[in-house]
Length: 78
Image (cartoon, rainbow, N blue to C red):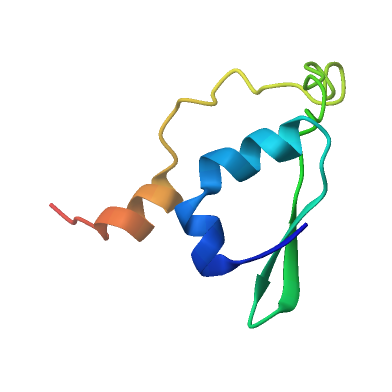
């Protein structure tokens, strides 16, 4: 089924239901097919821990770095 954008806006809920139940729905502009309305396919779960053991966090990760502080705040001479 090919549907123009204006008709698709007016009947979106109906078209989504049709696509969900397996019917092919194509949305067109000036009768030129632009997009297919398809059922969402989940990509799968993310895999956690991909970098486990690949690097170590330094003990002073939260410590101040004078060079970086100077870039942000300038050299404050007292």
